[in-house]
Length: 329
Image (cartoon, one colour):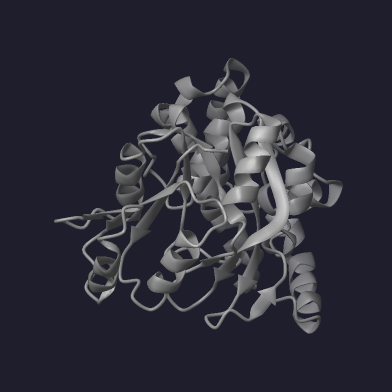
């Protein structure tokens, strides 16, 4: 494989880990790479560290004059892709030597639009916290069930951005990256659009040490696990889905016809739920359309939280206390 792969690395105040990440990229077994970096007005020593790589002909460095924010910085980098394939990278991880090679092999062998994979979750010193991000976040069973269907990234995000490899030709369909909701981030959107477009391949092996520390933009926190009341979980679920389906509606032309109608129905359903605090007996058919392919337990739990919170309230408290006793909360 002689194709050059553009690796996109947005940076911002990343002095603590950035050198280790860049070095892990530049020492990959797959040698035909171009690392494109965009620094978003870092206030620490990130730029000074980046300057150490200015004479490396594999590295291109852009320094923003005004802070763009994460989404616009990634969008800037996507517009700088020069070659047929691109990958995304975080600034604080470590790539194992075969990451690029194995991801490229999977994409080519499966003739896919998108390749993505699992990760090993580590602490700031690279000690293992969770051997599998996919198992910990309960994503692997969903990925296995929905791979190569439009359900893969429709109801929730199964694609971790720093693992993905895709084709330049699809960038025009991805841009502009949505910013309507903080709950629908760039990897969710890229994974969704490319899963609608064609074949997707998942790599269960872990080729990234996914570092968790005090300044992670996105990590392994499950926000709802900290909530003791069903009303808190319900409010979060509704807000997340309003942001997701609101974004879908704004970009409805990108969806197949059968999903365009469901996008609108989904948004209106969650809008209605905002006003129903204890019981909802309307539009259960929309809930069924959205959740019908989920596991029975996931279906029932979400149905009670969203439609019958008054009935679910005492059971939720019992469940929370049991999981807390088991140290799962």
